[in-house]
Length: 360
Image 1 (cartoon, helix red, strand yellow):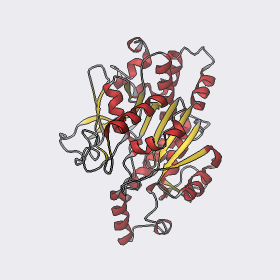
Image 2 (spheres, one colour):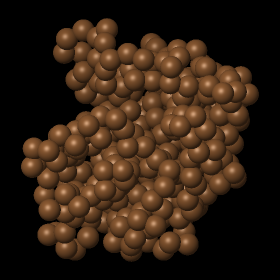
Image 3 (cartoon, helix red, strand yellow):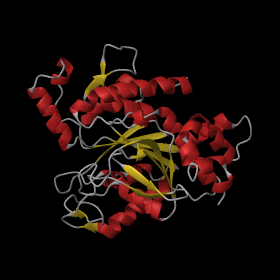
Image 4 (tube, helix red, strand yellow):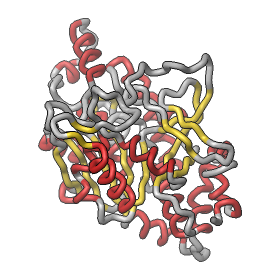
């Protein structure tokens, strides 16, 4: 293992607390670890991006979202454009402030921000339940993206409801398993394009250096994390918290004012390794007529989450955490009342991205 002797390796290990302060250096450190000759960094990055695939999971809407939207509608708190929103449509299509296009007086769907964060990175797959035409028209169209570059997969719900984003990835695996890298994201997070690019280069570099890493999780340090990450003394991940998946209330069992690491809605994988782990989970825990029965998950859910795959990688010592994300990147719009915070956060995220990545 060369991790201990490389600057990047230290940032995904024992020196993880230094990662945020070294955020802008990660692309350079990655190229150095990958053995890229001086002057060749840009072409190496372009090749890495071209061999990647973004897997955007837009299938869910969520019971909390539905309830909060109904309450806001009943209380007259929706704008005219929001009043016309179909409550049965995915949460990702809900209109919010537009900080992407030139028309600042317009609105744009929530999911447009997560799609913009991965646009141009090799191939693209969007997992949905329905509403493909609307996503093409209302998300891809305003962003000026070529429709031919974006493939759609429909997540089947064999028992009346989707069985988690791990199952969604498993169902769509034929579309992404031949890529080198998979960047998974969701439709309601304040994703940073810089965090995406820097993390992708870091994973590719760790792989090129023979570090044995299949999964890299961008993370932020914040107070009272809803999805806490536990690290060992060497900075390697031990567990990933997900209260809902585990059938508990968010925050259950945590002490007051606890600071910790949390994921920010981005996950990066070596594609072949992810496909193998998801197939193993399916083979090992699928119960006909019920769904998945994965130890540690809520027995009533029948779900398989990407978190379950992440736990497998951590148990094998093949997962790393890169704590370069800022807390504002974890501002998911899972309820209507969280929309203002999301809008403020994504405005700040985009402002920094445009400084660090002038071409974005």
